[in-house]
Length: 192
Image (tube, rainbow, N blue to C red):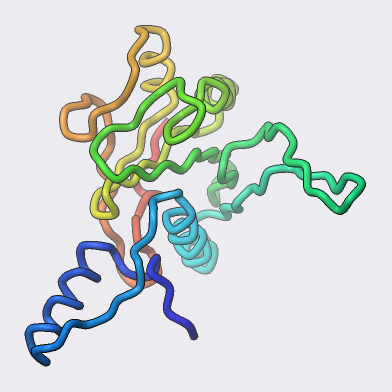
């Protein structure tokens, strides 16, 4: 199995490499921890979803954006009508998740990239109004995670709010670290 920088939290990786350098007296080369494009967080959700499926708690699938191959073997990414993850609990309740990961404690709204777009927010609101449990699973700096239910997303859009602040936002549901393959135990936190 090959090691990827996304397999270890950045703060933990820094501490491990600093400890190795202190023990050996040598500078330890380490892979770049890279930029935060959300793929590492989504990979962790996929692993957690596999554990939930094995426990018969939840079946959750990553939804890739639709694509078309156009002449010249180019890939055209089409508009995606789905959130990042769609699933169903063992009791039949639908779950729709937009996964977001930020390096700081702020999640911007109504932006083209790096936050929640108005289209993503509207999709979550529509799913929620029709009875699905929907919202944003937000990882902050790789060390904290919370659930933002669709009703908070709707309130934020209606009030003209430009972002959520992890430390002061009322109504966010903290997601605790799980055990084993369940890295963030979000299934016990998501509420409608």
